[in-house]
Length: 497
Image (cartoon, rainbow, N blue to C red; front, side, top):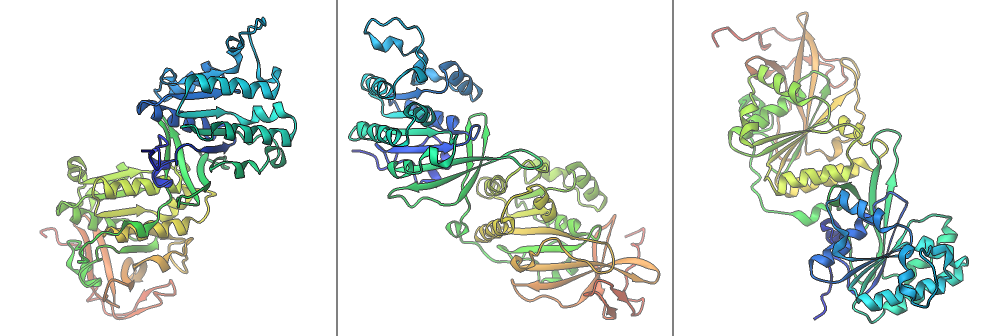
């Protein structure tokens, strides 16, 4: 029985293709030099060899030595499949001609096709990679002749138990590449390599067509690592719903929980916003510490602060996260600027949730997230999809969103409050000649919340939230001032407390 799909050799691509390639068809993999075409093709052939199928790599562009170097960099062995290169094809002639080296440009196109067909007849492979169409295009020297020869190749493989990948490096103009080639192939996969103004190059993949398959459309980020292409399929949050209880999550600070009628609900995200130094990260760490104490796995993605600095600061506020890291309950991951794509970050989060079972995620901060991925498009939409996924999984998410400025009118670089379930605002205010901090809840989709403004203090004893401050003026305008009595204001803890 013929299988409905065969694996491409790449788990991420198989996921995008809903199982793999329909067998006995002709496919086009196109992309600029350096985009990962050869690596993907090698994975395809090695997967066939692993399953006991004969596989054949036909190369007009690279030598076997060059192919071996690429394979060796991933720990692969090209001896697992057949390699047919034209600079050693003189062995095939057998007509008495003396020629030790035969280069592709010295052949007529028809002769090249004949040699390919003879090698396929000899090997009888189930998987074939043809690298590349650019050389065939040069030999043809005429678009119509080139198209006829590609069609002849397709007809030659038609009816055979062979799945073929044609590689095209997309050199030359669009007219020279002949867009009609897409219509001849059963499926088309395009790989792109994008050079940014700063940081590592980005790579992404798009399945342009695949007849009869409802594949996952749009772009999918990927990286080339030792072992092949690591593809990060675009996240579709609606596909990942799981049942969970929507109970409130306590922070261990009763007054802080009272602001949200018990705390954030499972499956919701909380936006902590305010100027630098007002306590946003510490509030998130308070919830993380309490969750770790309950034995719930948590993950912090740090974009701004170094992990060592974060842990030192947490200890100063009586939040010793070290034992929880040692036990594996807490994972803190540092993300280097300009070295990660949105798809890769989403894949990291999914791994923590689906493999490690993380119940709480902290992203610190959204500004750092944006800065780490310069020139990327639609980051807010991708973040929205990620938050929807975390909601479907019942994960509690905290987003740190610094505002520009310290006092006076302030604004955020990101208009992300509309996708947040809960918005907690923190501000500096002046009272009695001292700089103090205030905390309030502006929005809570998860249920009721206090509409009061309370004082926030963070010291060596941890987080404290004071009584409602009823005589505030100007907090929403960015210039909060307390005009009430001194009584409700918190002072330093007593030394014996």
